[in-house]
Amino acid sequence: MDFDAQLKLQAFLDGELPEGEASKVADWLARDREAAALLEELRNTRGAMAGFEAGIQLPESREFFWSKVQREIQRRETPAPKSAPTPLLARLRRFLAPASALAVILVAGAVLIRPAGPFDHAHTAGIETALADSGAFTYHDYSAGATLVWLSYPADNEVADNDEAGTIE
Amino acid sequence: MTATDHSSADDRTLVRAAQRGDMAAFEELVARHRDKIYARAYSMMRNEEEAVDLSQEAWVKGWQRLRQFQGEASFGTWMTRVVINLCLDQLRKQKRQRTESIEAMDEESGGVERQMPVVTSNPTAGLERAELRQRIDRALALLSHEHRTVLVLHEFEEMEYKEIARTMGCSIGTVMSRLFYARRKLAALLADLKKQD
View 1: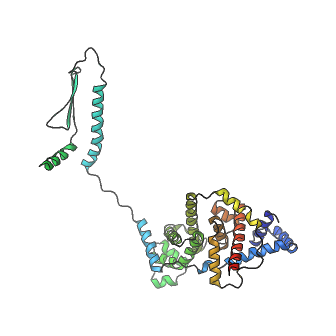
View 2 (view 1 turned 90 degrees about the vertical axis):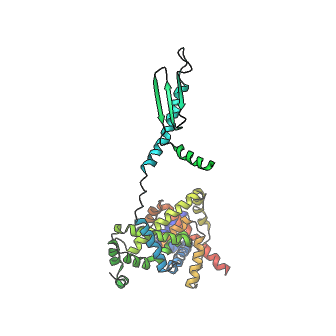
View 3 (view 1 turned 180 degrees about the vertical axis):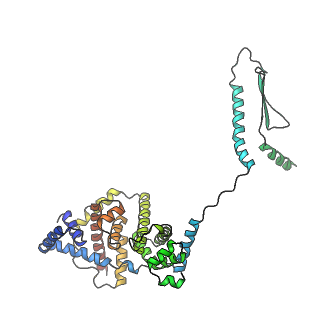
């Protein structure tokens, strides 16, 4: 018996064959004992499975199971709390920190890549840091007559300096 | 609607109340159908913990989608489809994690069952219900999840071949082949268990 014939036999058992096909299979079964035996085996297996699930019970009490379901439903229905608004200073600091770093890099880069020429001299340009306020940088370009002052205020190091002073004592 | 009303109301009335937001009505529906939903999950997953989790998830989804339930099928049938889909998703995830090769599975289902001798005597004849259930339980555990799923959907959910194919995302031919293999393998396993007695 080939595989297609076997599958046809199964479809016959499951009522999946059209009427014309089903009567042909019925005739074939009457003549072929091997086919009849296979059909019987498939039928027995199907019969053995009937009612199998009926004996399976959820291993948790009604109250406990429902409490879990209810909690999960409520959890999903509760909208997620909105995050607290970020204080203005914190938002500014978040922006200022990378901006300060970028500005320092740009100024330093401008000084370093300035082309050397006949008019170049030691005091054409330079960066100064005010000792009183280490968060302030001054850039002088003497040849262009320009001065740029960069204040990284509020300076992060203010707090650090104060703390440091405390620890030194 | 009071608790007494809930316990005496039919499913349709409870569903309508639950659709209006009555959680006590939904609790009554859970109490009525929880064993069936769990049993379906257990048949497919073969793992008690996973079956409990998936049936719980099915009830949560059931509540969330309750408005979509129009009553074309019974509430119990609708809920079993919810849990079946969750189990299939879980099995697919597990399959992706395993190294099981599809080719190996196809080989297994494409030839072995043709060679197996026919089990002539009924291996479950005369068994007590509890003993029979235990044997089927052991035999089902030895099938691959693809074969077991086809068997569960056909025998317990009473789905037709084309419906199983649609649910599992495969061809009708594959469904027929898997179902044939699953049945023949189950018959052989049950016969082996009988011999061991």
